Image (cartoon, rainbow, N blue to C red; front, top):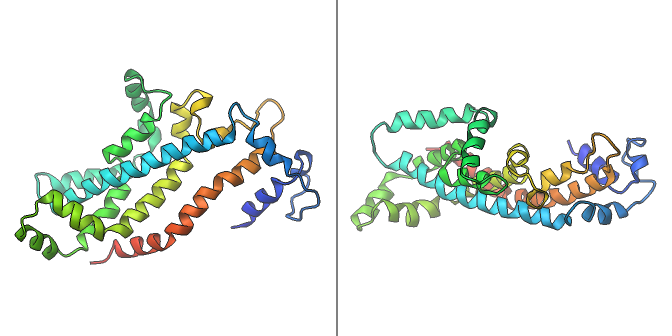
Length: 256
C-alpha cells in the first residue's frame, strides 16, 4: 500500500529521463531541483494554488459542520411532518452521483454569474447537501439520552440553546470525523473544480498538478511528483491529528 507513495517520493528526486527507466525505489541520482522548478513552473507560484485549496477547504469544513449538524439535530430531535419521508429521501441522495446533477447545477450557477468563483464549490456545503455527514451526526445524536434535553427544557432552554450548548459539545467526535473527511474530500476535489474554475489564478492544487501533464508534448513528471508530495503533507497531518476522533466518532455513531 505504501510502495506507490515511496516510489513517488523517490521519483520526485530523480531526473525526468530516469523516472520511468528505473522502477525500483533505490535512489542512485539526486535531483532536488525538481522541487524548486515545480514550485515556479506554472503561471503562479505553487503557494498560490495551495492558498486557493486552503480557502476552499476551510469554507467547506465550516459549511458542512454548521449545516449538517443543524439538519442532523432537526432529524434527531425535532418532530415535524413527513420527517421519516424526508430522512429517507436524504439518504437516497447518497446514491446519486455528482455526474447526474452537474449539468443542471452548472446551468444554475452560470445564470447566477458564479462560474470561475469558489461559490459553486462552497455554497452546497452551507446547504447540507452531504447526506453522509448528516446521517453520521443523526446516529450520534440519537445515542445521546433524551433526558439531557428534558433537563435543559426544565431550565428554560429552547431548541437553539439545546443544540448549541448541549448537543454540539457532546458530539465533538462526530464533528471531528466530518471535518477530517470533508478536509480530505475538498482538498482532493478535481472533477467539480475542473468544471467550475476556468482561469489559472483560481486553480486549486489538483487542477494545478494536472497542468504539469502535457498530452501533446513532454510532461514534467519530476516537478509534478515533487509538488504532489508537498500537496500530500496537509492531508497527512489532517489524518494524523484527527485519527483518534475518526476512530471514536465512527465507533460511537452506531451505539445506543
